[in-house]
Image 1 (cartoon, rainbow, N blue to C red):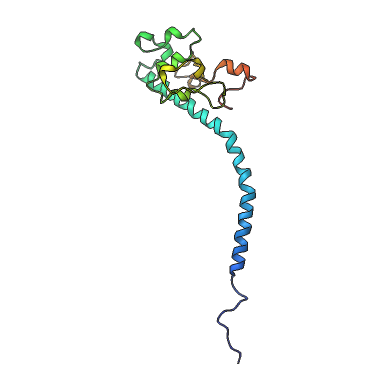
Image 2: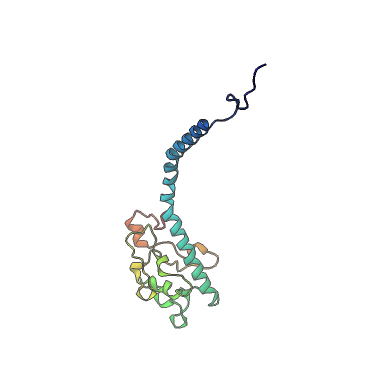
Length: 165
């Protein structure tokens, strides 16, 4: 009669096998993870700019809801709009008219536009703090005409839009 051993070593998964599998998994993760993160760094300014544009468009639309569905650049300054500045280079005045609907003037500076200074206070806002321009022909049927980018920036950078696209 042969004695039975309660622990048969030939069957099952040992501790050394488990440690080897974990080590291989960690090595593969260290090799693959840096390459996966590279694309997100390129997309971050683009996503940030898209978010800024969405907030600006929503703020202007909310302003229009309070003013008989008319955008700030169609309403006279005496009624809170910026019509008198439509033909001037003072683009910031259109955003200033809708400032109660916009969270912060920082959203007017595109992260891809390194020449635009982010402003914290609405009282200090000027054209140097704005990356986007206003489409004066914007209306409800053309929602994409609300705001897109500063023309000077487009000319300086081979017609690239300043939203990082």
